[in-house]
Image (cartoon, rainbow over all chains, first blue to last red; front, side):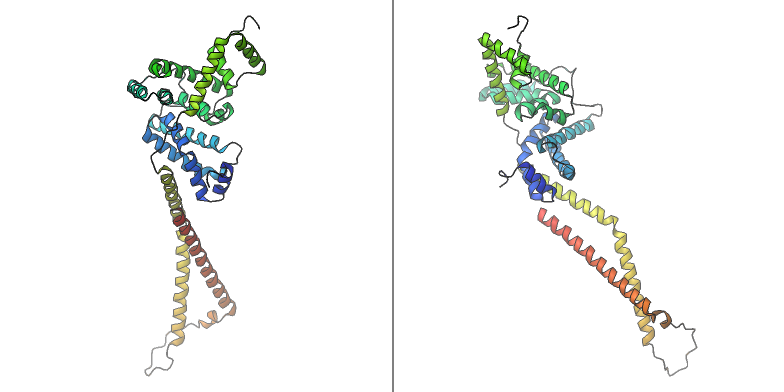
Length: 190
Length: 172
């Protein structure tokens, strides 16, 4: 039944106090929220915590959701904010996930991951691993734009960016991803 | 085709992502028609975009959504308990008033039932004619009204608690 009901309907039902409707929304978006959280916090355990926290926040603030934006945009904004708060708690010096001046981080484990990916001969796995190796901000914007197919306007809303800033970030993230793919996964993407 | 127009990878990505204006798009279209190698590059970019979209989502541990709902039920219950604790004084006040009322009723009843003709002469005690107070019709109705109000308040609190408990049970 959950597949046939739209997000809007489920949100309205959840706002009216029907918990099963919210449970359906959680089920529908658990993988999206978890993947996005993982892109930001880079650790599965932490991503579980952040994703769960995000859904609880969404539940708490659902009565305030007026449907001006899509439910997913609103939810991913919560995931982004929760991830940022989580990372700030771990490192109080972090102000944003922006890493304009940070060099591309190529983890050593990527080599092992690359060999696994090579064995599988799976381009998608390589791409996934390469995205994981990006910084939080880059991985987030790539995931939202290319994987979840959100518009740039929606990404601006989610990540609190200006349009030109979002465009620049997306372009930079793509360039960094290209470098990683060429350096670490050249054989798979050839 | 303008001579100074040069296509690069970023511009082609912007073209594929739909970021270009109509005029820019037309220029790129013309450039692509003129240089087939750039058309191939565009095909590669579109394939990469499809690959992005086909990238599998990460799966959380099994039972993730159940844990979220259980955490929500716990939070709701904790909130209810916290709110209920804040209103404990109402219960205590109602209980005290009821207790005092019952005590007063017993005292009055005891005084009325006390024997008037005792075999021995008892020292005279100073007495007060309570009937002056309790015999007052307005006061009697007032007390009855107060008792009814307190009882209704109790019933309301009880039903509210039952409703919350039922809700928590269905969530669980």
